[in-house]
Length: 79
Image (cartoon, rainbow, N blue to C red; front, side):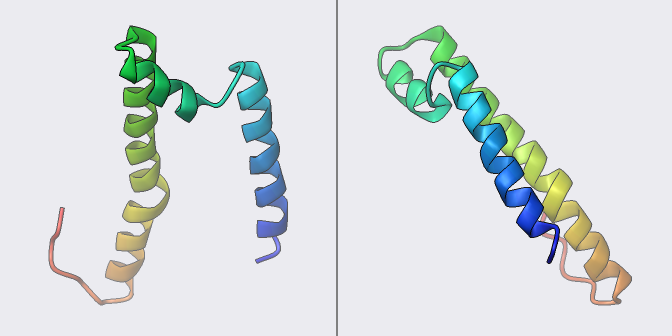
């Protein structure tokens, strides 16, 4: 619980640095650029979605499933 007070401001700071470094919001750039069929924007959106999925499974889904199995509550196989 205490680490949350460190993680949230650190994450906000990193997002701010990323937004300034990228010269704008990556989601906004991706959405508006895709409407004009910009290759760079399509690559940005695909990368954002791809790495979200990878991060979700690495940080949440896989460890949560392992914890459930370790507790002896084996859910039906979904994925």
